[in-house]
Amino acid sequence: MAEGEVQRQVQATIDELVASRAEIGLQVAVLHRGHIVVDAVAGVADQRTSDAARTSTLFFATSTAKGVAAAVVHVLVERGALAYDQRVADVWPEFAAHGKHRVTLADVLVHTAGVPGLWPEITPDELCNWDRVCAFIADEPPWWPPGTMTGYHALTFGFVLGETVRRATGRTLASILCEEIAAPLGVADELHFGVPGQLMARVARVGPEGDEPPRPVSGSPLDRAVPPGVQPTAAFANRHDVLAADIPSQGTMTARAVARMYAALLGHIEGVELISARRLKSIAAPAFSGTDQVMGFPTTWALGYSPARLGTAQPRPGSTFGMVGSNGTAAYADIDSGIAVAVMRNRIVGDFSVVTAIDDIVAAHYG
Image 1 (cartoon, rainbow, N blue to C red):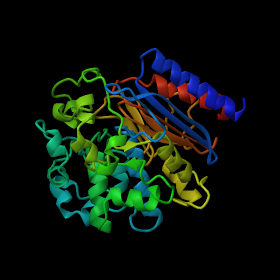
Image 2: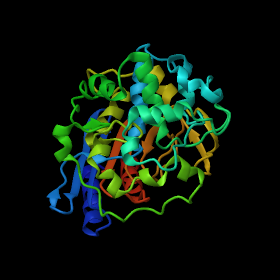
Image 3: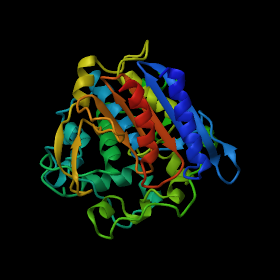
Image 4: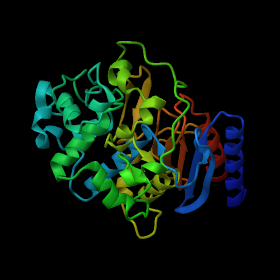
């Protein structure tokens, strides 16, 4: 199957999904050993105006952005500004409250820090208040002895990473992402936690409002981790204050930008070296396994990444690493096959069939 055939198959797949009204707008990007082999788009960016989705359209990507936040941390470790065994409280003393003084940066990356929860009445306005959220997390008693269990830090992940980075370097995750990763890769206007005001018109509108997965059971661990006021609904994702805020557990990006970032982590973008080959192997290696105390099922984490793929290809722990978002977005890379893949969409539905379909096409050609 020629590379042009991969583009054709992906384009036909996403065109069909849009035509069937299963999707509104889609972007897919695939790089193989640094070369673009798929750059596909279908559908509309905004159902109200019927504006076409473009390869430059920015899509709200929920937890797919966690992989971007983790990449920033790995770049900083590579350059000696951070260390995986560094204790968070060494740079953020308030975080030591209630026995959290031994939590390390690695614990945060594998979701074992024990602080996945937020307060039940939190509003989107409050989630956009960095200092308010960080103060709450710092004073939060851990749900389990840190380092002993894992539980998905759905929203707190980015705040703990971001505040640790800010305290250690004096810079925000967003500024480092822009200056040290996105700008060198030529995608500074396409890879964001918070969207700059001048780019807000390029953001796809999520829809339709009210068409979202069921909410977690009230009082459940997941409900405590993602309280009702900050559930990733269409209404939440379309708020300008949410889109503009640095909330590094979520972000807004193009498929081609985040796929290019993963290709750079693989070492396949000429002139850009983010991490060494040795570190690449370490970040893809499974680092912690156990029953997720928030989600309730068995899970394995690499350092900031899931080692799983959603397609039918056999999993390759230690080779595949990336993140999916609750809205059915995804971005990941595979060391052995040399691929970097990203899928963006402007619906928030707990369905990953589009990612599975794309992964199966990619795997059939590249493995």
